[in-house]
Image (cartoon, rainbow, N blue to C red; front, top):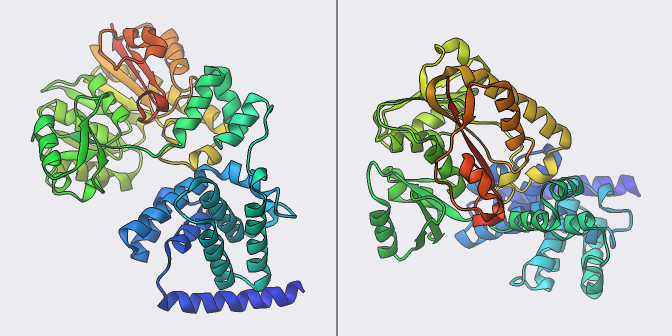
Length: 471
């Protein structure tokens, strides 16, 4: 039986490949290819999606559907598998990767998307299964999905579960991570973090104030019929609630704006670079914060923008060129070796936007929650400690060092700074900078640090700390 099925399967795949060369792919087929790539090859969903969309030539609405299906299915994986395992006889783990992805994507539509009729979801799934597999697979897909529709009472999370298990299933996060956040933040905050991580990310842009004011750019957007409002987080930000891809606008091409999350804008502001200063950006790619610092310096002075990866060098330079910024000088190298390249106490400002677990940007990169482990967090905290230690001697007395991450992990954030200050008596907290008011911990903002959680402003989770060298 299995031999016949495998021969039929091979023939089916060949037929599908031939058909695929002449027939335009549907949104669901594109989404399935991306999900299978994420599952089988460990591809990043955002990069794989962009690549597939460029090849597929879908309409704007179909590209939107494919995007929704990919990010939604990846984000809700835990919950989808929980439901599917009630209906798939041998469990989802035994299925081929593409079949598992097809079922997950179909259940995502049934459970989470109201606008797509259930019968259309089942019909499309069965059609794809017939094209890509054999009759046994399409029959199984049909049977599983129709059973689900007949027994909707099985599509819910049971009551009375322990908090970490309930939150893990309800908001689809790995249980170890939920447990960790409950310990760090309490049950209510941990649940709010997980809930916020499943909301669609806002589109925000940073205004290049060397070329145009925020008010004027906002007026231009509103005149074009866009739904845009000033950012409540950063005085340089605009939140675009509808208006398409901002990187395809003439404002972007002409260097009047950059696409950047609101939380991320606060980092350059915390550095407080001034015209004429010498600034070091230790881990600069892709260059958004570097460019923002150059804009704040009115493009007067010099920013050394370093990154470990040579292929990212041009990304930083492209940003600077597009924005008309000449103060940025890009260099390639290991940030741990910067102390051998530059003289001690030579920089007015240092930004260490450190490599991190990335748990603050899960709503933009939903696969992060599944790909990271507790060991990854331990490994990255050691690197962060070494980086801080390594660049500390490059700052002038009286200068400011800003440490930032896009994570919400205390071990990577305040834990790092507590350890650093205990080992470096020549540093102190740099108080006096005005951070947005996050009521959960006014003490942090007062002393020169800020932990933004994704639910605070519906922006990325970020940590920013300001230190001053006193001798």
